[in-house]
Image 1 (cartoon, one colour):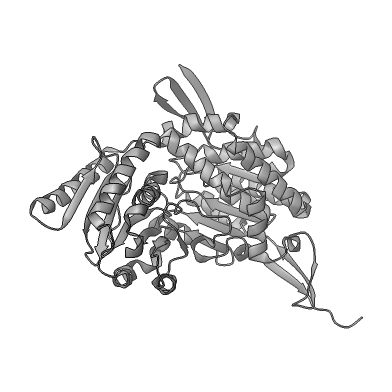
Image 2 (cartoon, one colour):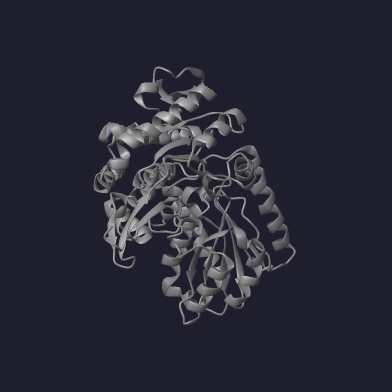
Length: 479
């Protein structure tokens, strides 16, 4: 049996001997056993660590040219895209065993995150949000101001990570480095391994930059830890469900900049002009990919798709094509394991729809040949937005006209995030405007829902610019 020992933390070199192991969690499945070391974290340790991170940021990161930072982050992404990179291969062994995601899903997650985090994307994101990236290096002349400006990032960013996308935590370390902020992240209990491995990559490339970053684990809700941490922070970025984020926000001082990426909902819309036989297989494959990436766990994933009637292909035939595509994709990228509760929920929902189908209602249920690998349900639009139980369970609602859809979305407007739109005629522009007014923050094409670029205004905000503080020099007289 292969034994793998990992740490649910990564701290600067000075603190490695300070760490004491609270417990070792064991995961065993097949020929591999994982020993995951969980650290002891106390208020004195947190206070010392956060102050050290700020000192290292001041002595190194704050004056590091943005060009160098981009180079380090680009190199880290390229290493993780290398199929033979040892840390990637390690991650593909341990993350599936810990989370239940299939190895193929974890690999797709890593690729999606890193392919959008290369040099060109980083420069574009910086240029989009702050204009000239050199504002982060020193005062630069601004023609519009008629003076000089400089952007300053927080001294210390603190982030609480979620577990729904295996490679997502790297994004916070990237963003903090780009705005020259030290960063301390808390890994999620359900996926505690990727962030420490990513920081190990940064340490391989630039040990001094890694000294400005740390990741730890402690029991969520530990007030004495979180209160000190938030007091020391200059900015806090939270990922998680509504209740989790609400509870954490109550602990963050009002003077600390806070960004919340809470629970969000996605959906798709296909107009009658795209319901054509010649497009059927390609479009069905795109929709199946949207519904399968990250096993539908990400906020980017669709909970349902609206299909406009009156096209060459009817909604039921389209659903049959999607079902076939879901099965093909499941062979290439299997869904992960479910808890008994998750499987039971899917079985119950399937049964309720099957009963309606038997009664003669306009409902169609298409399901994986065995088990709960995927589920496709069709019905006429009921006029309400029904969240999916996830794990590749997708509803399709048939509508007479796409402009019936917005009224069903108003009740979930604050939670809307990602929409795939393929109208195919002149109505698309007006429809997109309506979605933007409802609260949707990203509109893309079917098949691209899980692949946002670095330029995306995450949840409708500028993730870099929103954390910056500016200093302008408007001296006009020569004295």
